[in-house]
Image 1 (cartoon, rainbow, N blue to C red):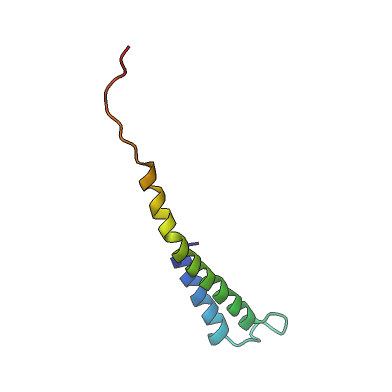
Image 2 (image 1 turned 135 degrees about the vertical axis):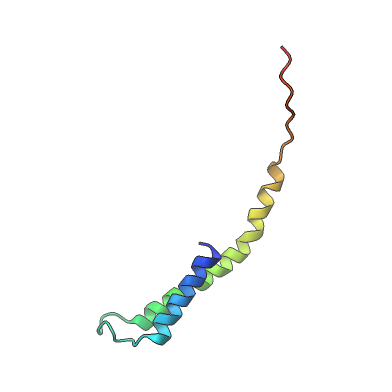
Length: 74
């Protein structure tokens, strides 16, 4: 999950928690709890994206190979 998707989940969770009445879909669905869950998922996604981002950049440096366009000697 990237940073953009994580921010989307944070925003969606905040809307569900603070902008919508908790009993809009009845007593069986608690929109404030679902909003809190989305905000937690978005926060964890942002943290993981930031923590794992430096590791992605280092993998490409170690795999660089030099090749020459010389045909093999037969």
